[in-house]
Length: 153
Image 1 (tube, helix red, strand yellow):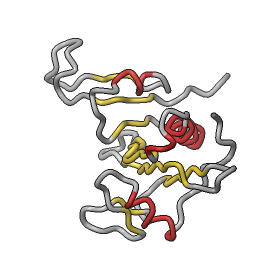
Image 2: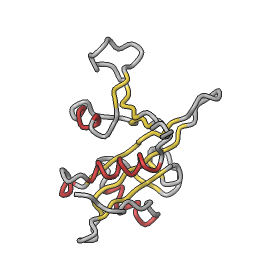
Image 3: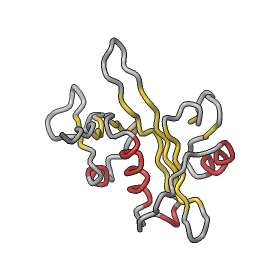
């Protein structure tokens, strides 16, 4: 199910719904200790069902600046799809929209559950082991990374 152009940026009026649909996160307009904020977002996207006018899910990303002139990256901080809309491609559409908005940036998942490991491989993420991790074990906290897309020549 493709949700054509249904990923507008979130607005302050969306934060209550986002907080109630976050599996434990609080979403605020301004930066606040212990909360995800729109002020800190590179992109805070909302997807709505065009037929029902209901919000289906949301995504929050932030730009992480690196120290010492190293390139920064985009952190995919939160992704939520309401239970009644799961298994319909909503999460994939949100991730694809983020990819389209930052094609030249590396994207790293802020946190990820190892159970749906294969789910993150489908949209183009790959597993990068942590420095102390033994090859292939995925037992240490490595990262799920989508590298920058090279510009077509």
